[in-house]
Amino acid sequence: MFCIGSNNVKYRWYTFVVYKEDITLTELVDIMTSSKLPTMISPCHDKDVITEDDIEKYKKRNMYDENLHILGSPKKAHWHLIVEMPYAKQPKASLNYINDSTGLNLSYCSGVLWFNVLCRYMCHLDESPKKAQYSQTQCVYLNGFNADFTLPTPPKSKRVIRRDLLLFIRSNPYVTFTDVVIAFMDDDEVSEFIEKKAFYVKSLIQDQNFSSFAKQC
Image (cartoon, one colour):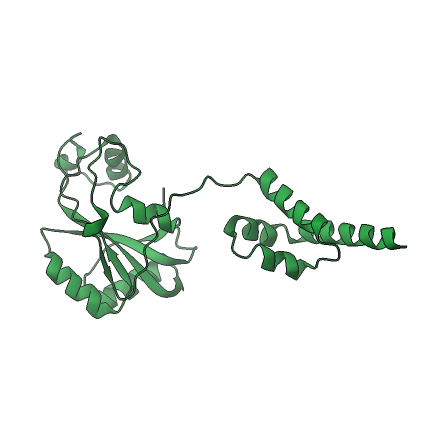
């Protein structure tokens, strides 16, 4: 949903789980504060139960504890954490960095693909009504962490992205490739399209500028 396990991709934010049976909230706050890592700690998830999706995940991870495979049984109480790296890192390097900074001895962490989706998941804001809901007021923010609880927007189709680019280019005679990049720098989807389809975008610009020049002759 919001994480990718590949070690070939670098992420700025990572998430992991800490269990209540292993640590108190006060201890966890002290550890994460001392780590200097910007951190968000979720409310304690103490009302979660095992779902069919959970069982499938446990099977894929070769987790054979019988209690993990009983549909509807309670999960261990836990906290979800999000931490921000100093700069984008690969998962293995990030796991080592988090462990070195906190001493938590984690066995895994996952890179965050959609930041606002994960922030909302910390309280199950978009989950089924049957799933336990948690209050945002119980989230803990440390070391300047800035959460984003905005609703996710549907991804743009390539057709919509092409249309937006074409309309911008046609509305701006003699626009440059740099102008286009700057114009869409706050739109991650369009920016990614421009990077992957740079030749295509440059061709549109060249055709538009040629047409504008021809009309003046």
